[in-house]
Length: 449
Ligand code: HEC
Image (tube, rainbow, N blue to C red; front, side, top):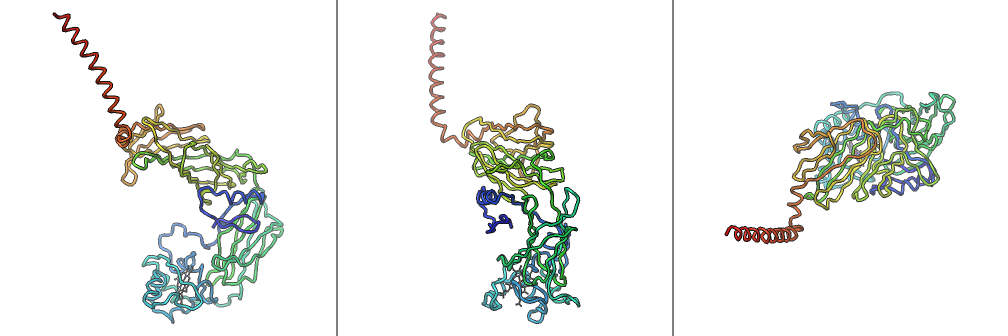
């Protein structure tokens, strides 16, 4: 659900390893991309650690309401008001859980003319029951409007004032297809509103503030509701990184391919403790917010931050993240693999920031990988039945951790390659020893005489 910029056309997110297309587009538009989920009541936002969602919650929290209305006409799928007149409770449960079984039974797919087939929702038995009961019991409330309204307030968190005169764009969707754009401007209280909205669409709010794009998640009007109210915080930007810090870093080192390479995964938790969006230094052609060092020979580099998978660009030994950094925490996962080619190999994992807590987890194998640092003491722990050595280091300046491979088994697994050389070497050593030792013994025997 990552969008391109406010310039046409929107670029759907493509998942190649380092996404240059999006970045290039970003520079052309001279702005940032930022997918930012505004938080608002129950719309498409995962339930907050609620163990037992009700049938209504299952229906509304994105699962069914994304495609079905209750009494408001066709949407992506049919209107489900009174669906109990067409289906038994058991069949409703099957729709919710496993529509394929209905398709197979009725030898018809789709069942309703003019609709696509319904994708499986993978609900648990329990949830499918609950949502079926909800459909059977639902009664639309009285006095609802004919159309919907989305309104909200844009607040500037940095200045602590309502954001007046803010352009706000509303994009309507039919399924995944963009349909229309509507425009509004916020008033002196930062308030905007879009009215006369159709029920059979989903909606997304988008706006730019100081070059940073904010996008809401997709929203739909929930059964019995004709309003959606949003609180939209925006932040002024800064190019200074004074509020950016690396809170913790976990490094995971894991041998791969029978010991011929290691995978390194770095899990970063950064914090922006200010009330501005950090946008880095901007030049005409480039923008960088966070920088990561990776070894030149690193392969299969993957990068993801909490909102945008893989939004970084690699140039040699550096990986540049270009995304604006909102106040709060940001988690970044960076992974790569390193070929192990020699015996006794050492490599270093660098970090470019001062770090409060650093833990290194090294998979304990015959390779004998360990952290080489004076005073680094390993504790053996189990993670998912696998033994790891855990090293804890703290309050470190930017630098690197050296990891060494002592590799008894590296030798073993590469025996084929080294065996002839080793045999030849042994042969020579034995020959030379025999020559001297034999000669010595001979001469000492002589002198004995
Ligand atoms: C991605 C869109 C989508 C989602 C999400 C979705 N449905 Fe559907 N649903 C459809 C479509 C399309 C049909 C029509 C399929 C057909 O006729 O074969 C359908 C058909 C149905 C029907 C039969 C309607 C009729 O009148 O024949 C039921 C009942 C139903 N869905 C329930 C659910 C429930 C419950 C959920 C959530 C757990 C859900 N759907 C989620 C798209 C969706």
